Length: 376
Image (cartoon, rainbow, N blue to C red):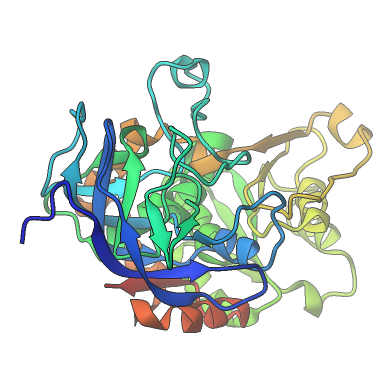
């Protein structure tokens, strides 16, 4: 049945208010307007950032809304003026836009489009309206993607075509978790061959950092987590050593300093905990170390440490989406996935039907999953 230009009724997981389970509802998805794209979602991953919204940790979030931002799908229809994708294309929605015209897009050192809604989400499309309704109520968008739904609508600057041979249940991870972690190693830190690295937090992003460090040629990759059950997977993906802070009397940064003759070249915080961010900084060598902040902390968090930690030569960096310019780099990453330059299937511990989405979040909160992929 041709749905072009028509409202589509479909199932979506709606978060009506924080601290509540997601509820599977029938919603209405309006057709795309000019320079918009409607996508049939095939697979979507569950990310810790989605859970932050459920738990009310990100201020100014707009409710009710449809979460999800790590996905792959197929274009159902396009609005007037769309030139970069067409119906039938395999695509990845992009929570970091790339308009190609703003200062952020034209700056070679930046991957942050000025139109991206990261950190300043309106919960609406670029024209300040929504394409979602449920029970007569407007449903907000989440960081320009909203993928916990059978169909979504995104602005053209928030979607990119990928290779026709891409396995969508794996490629969806390139929409957030894998790219964020992998890019933090190869782009933000620029890990060199022979260098030493410490990775704090072994979820999907932390394990993707390990993959990036290995591809970059790091000689030692120290994986750090309070859940020792994650160590086997970390070693499988490239970690050379694993450390559980609970098994040591001294602070973890002292343990790592002792292991590495004063500290690692690169330390990555992949949790979103400000105390651990400081630990990562202290774990890097005082004269040349770099700490990369990857995890998303609650919006009211502050980071506090002595400036003397930087005066001697340390560097602190942050990078959203691994520093990748989304439209330019996501198709290349998918092609690298197809060419087996790296594997992402090891990051997926669970695959669930979409209607079991709350079970997927339970697995995340219990530390029993790395990445859960929901399939429609």
